[in-house]
Image (cartoon, rainbow over all chains, first blue to last red; front, side, top):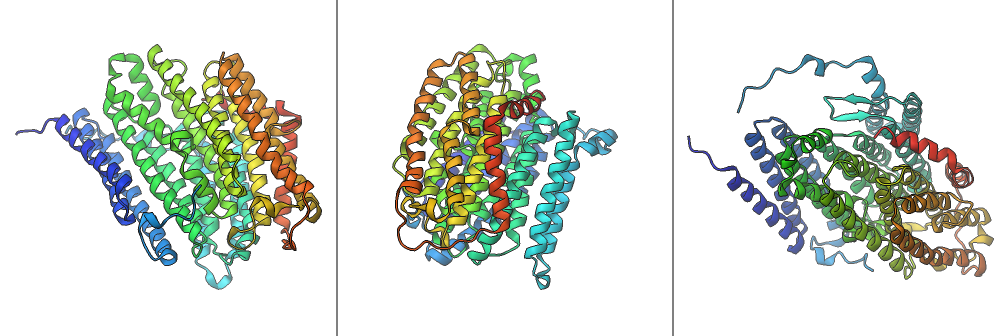
Length: 102
Length: 502
């Protein structure tokens, strides 16, 4: 059976992670920013699975379950905050978050 | 994939010592869940039951942690994912005390702001529980889960004034930046796992010690990403931007909780992971110097930026936010000195305690003075406070003197310990810079004092009656500040006892 080389998968994970990080820094819509955070976490999950396979050690796959759960909780809290923000601000654009500045 | 190994039955059972060592965690977790269930009983008006349950949980947790602290044993738990040692117990007392005091001062505040929802206290307990687990975690996944338990509760607390735009914005900013920092830290953990085959910090160190060839770029990058995550949580300079905004937007008691619990938890975990990852005795000389140099620069920048920007602030919460960044810098000095001086990390721990006490005290006063939506917390609003509320002004003066590091207060004793440890470790230039920065800070702390004591009151002061709870909390904080300042040896010996278990 043909197997993908680990470094290919790892570079792929790194690429996803940095796409997420870049999106977080440049995108203005909070919902997109939240998606970028999810992207970063999922890149980490994939990294864990790859290493787990490479090291033949189950710890990495166990970690993924925890990360998925935490990411779900994070999404719930984040969306709650977005709704609260939308109620007072009437927008989800980060450019309009400017009451607290130096 | 190899066949799954049989689970060792020993891992599934717990010895009586382990159960005993887990007692504070069981009690706090149980109390939190009962409080969560009590919130549902709307018909019984849950504000009193939940509030009292919160205080009881904290009290019980503190008592059992103090018991463990006297016991002084280290017990490894859950297949070495957690350890319950005096270091963890020491900080558990700090977290639970800070949660209890925050609950006490919030009660009247929540009524005044018309946000008296019992969930507030439950979130507070969950955050404290997250801090407790985080400090005792020895596995990077465990650290991550505990960190998120703490952070998610605090995000919700920061945004608790739902109809206030500043509170919402602060919560949103904190959420986005905090989640990104957690993700970066987790990526670092994944890299450490890939490089060494384990996420347990002692096992990582062991692997590096036995096979130095494992120290690949992957490992180094992993270490740096984890460190960056922690530097974000303690708000040191390249990652400090969130702190003043969040401090200004969050409800005043929550800000107090954040300055104390959150920072203490982040620093305690930082020290545990840092020491276990081999800072000070295991890594190669090059990495050691590398680490040292980078932390050195970060500490200097943090102190300088925190103190100089605080000079121009007029909002008190924001000013204390920048002052908190400056204190992070002093704590980093303690961290750098800790590995080389014979006091170890004890001065840093004492500093954390002193810092928590004086900041919590200052935020008790801000909570009492705040008008609707946390207004009225600008510098001119304090004018003539000594005539309106002489005792409040006196307490505030004690805390400000302490923050500036003037004897006989806790801040002076703690700063003295940190700086003398720094001198002992041969970090003379660093200590000189810290002392100069500390001298700058006297200006903005004493400016508050000038407003309180030497200006005439403007307008008609809002009569803010303190609740009995807040009075007790405030008196306790003043007493603690003076007590640590006058008799620092006791605090130091307790801290030494705690750090020897690291």
